Image (cartoon, rainbow, N blue to C red; front, side, top):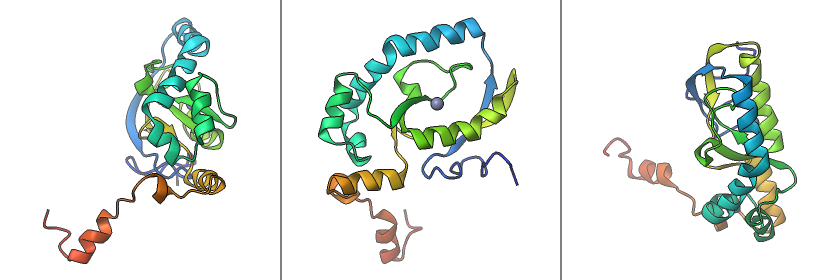
Length: 178
Ligand SMILES: [Zn+2]
């Protein structure tokens, strides 16, 4: 049993349903370069990313239980308490501040992810690791999202249509035909 809480590659990180891992070769970049990127992120990128979320990822935000008011907060570049931004490919490796590398996460899931990943990287110059890759730009743990939706008087079904696909195939008894 791995002490790092990983399942097999391709499966979800334990405790974080919906976040699969991908094989990834981590190679540490220089500290100077890392610090430069980190500073650029803090000074401007994170605000721009929040505006981007509000403009381009409204559906994802709503499905995660963000209210219209919170989405307005993102639109102004400000943060919402309890959530922060994760770099999928680490900044001290090949990761960049491109929006494609950024995911808004609830802080519990975010720290759980780092508790899982960071021990594999510490004191390493290079390592093959299973990298957690959340799909999309917003990851809120399903139980937290459900609570937030409840508080808004909504359900996931009222926000995003359920996909029902497997049930339909089962009903037809011909799941293999396509
Ligand atoms: Zn992170």
